[in-house]
View 1 (cartoon, rainbow, N blue to C red):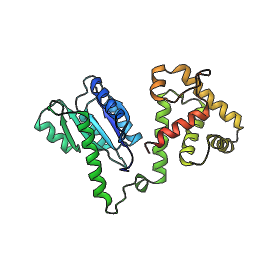
View 2 (cartoon, rainbow, N blue to C red):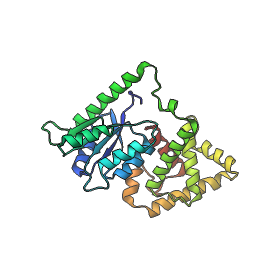
View 3 (cartoon, one colour):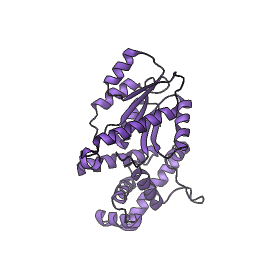
View 4 (spheres, helix red, strand yellow):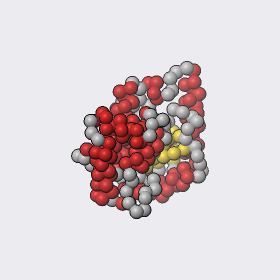
Length: 267
């Protein structure tokens, strides 16, 4: 948990208008960033495991989505997380019994959406205040850096899972050899800041005992396949880098750099 970086957040909410408000809120300030927004408690727990956000904004009632906030809380309490997020609940329920149960489940704050002064900024500012308090409590020498409480194998597995989640979102086929090369290249570039994507691909060529051209061709085939078979909405939502107008698809170098940069921002 680094208090100098923007607070990474996950929003689990089925009200579109509420999602738009949080999105607009994030666009007006530089101290928060959303790693995802979903109306499914099941997708929410997967996003927490892969992205390890510092905070979760959770709607208890997901009538238009899947699951419920209570199911999410149950799942997160069973998950073995190296870093548990701050959890703030937003709800239209005004019940002391429900609030007691939610607090007992590990929720840090509850906001009733019907209160007169409720706003997205209020929720976000409260999360930032909690983050500051938690950091100050842990500043007595206890390890707060995620890398200090993860083993190298756990870190590799977490980052690899994150990369694979990103590749799944845009439909990079698991059956394609190029997917494995893309995943490995992104991982290597994340760990080697001074390396270029070209040198990373050359390293893969040596490791796999294949020609450089063979590696890049397999990568490009996997990328082309995704751009031909995946929906344009998914591609535009999850791959936001500019693409050459004439080719219509990113090159392996562009693709690797984009995802290395995207993932590095939330590590």
